[in-house]
Length: 316
Image (cartoon, rainbow, N blue to C red; front, top):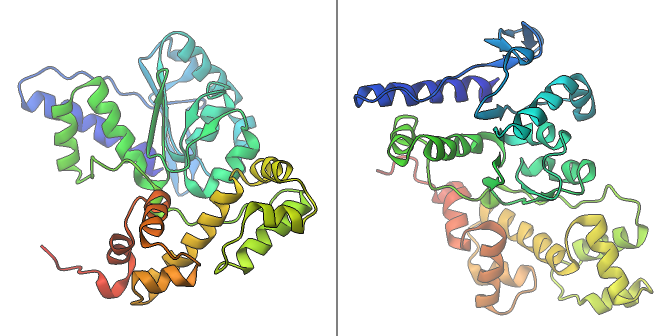
């Protein structure tokens, strides 16, 4: 509901800004659906679209809102919509998906072989359902062949601003950013990601490797050591690990260690050297580089953002 109403509000304001500057409005905005009315939030809200999909012959841009629930059921219930989106794209329309609306977009087949973003909490499910799509976990926005996606939760606002800039102009996008108080420069959802070990697979050897990594977080473990412990060849382990977890063994080790560091920085006053030692890093330069690669922030920036003792809510 938020992505529908919010997008509608911002795009209408685009036309207002244009008229305030003595220019003609550039956007014709329609809410389009399969049915004349749809209830949401257990009947709390009812949406009445401006038009049904069979009444819209062509549009320049289709924006798919975020959707929640059983994804397989959602796709089945929206089969007509999926076909309509695919048809519009074939006629030259751009297609954008907000947050987990990416599941609907992927259901059309239009994301096959393309890059995509969605909410990081749904990345494992997305990869299971759409293995041929290149999911970019950390991205706020992707733009490829007139197809656009956004990262999780309220990062859809950044995609709407991006589309306003692309279709209307930078000056109006800046006005929207200021009017709606949106950080126009956000480009990564890395600082928000909570790493959850991907264990919904059937590879017992890989699961044992994951558990060993997680219970020996202070140790420096080599891939060869893991392979020997599991009586597997190194290349075989690497291949199976990547297939099961969507991470290389090295990436997984880093993510597990950095997640421990993040929690420590959020809840204690520990210094960088203390948290390094806790997860087995001895070189500060290497540690900081890995931490920034995973989170998009330095350790001190992360602590100042998420540790209550370091947050100044009254700062000017």
